[in-house]
Length: 139
Image (tube, rainbow, N blue to C red; front, side):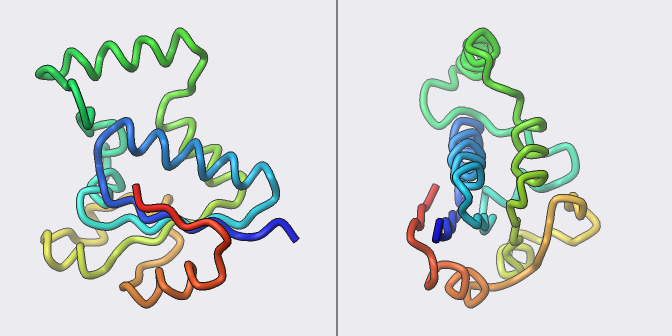
């Protein structure tokens, strides 16, 4: 049995969103079930026009570092975030949006990309996902 991967996407930084989507899609391609629980600043990436808005976690340099990393990733054949998200969804990856974060940060469902979200839930939703997982990550 291939198993299950559960990922908490806590950070909204571009490199961490890339990591979450690449690991998630890799797990899916190996036959695993995958869910990503977007919370706090990670949830901001699910806003309309927000997926590609995050800065780098290190060496952002007023956006220059972000530009350089995106350029290097393109040269290495790494897909853009929108394509990685599309692939993740097409492979059967699930996305859960944190309702508590929505309330705390004043985010409404109408501000989010409903086409990306499978479920809205609180910590119990994530715990139910994670308790049966062989891999759990906090990104």
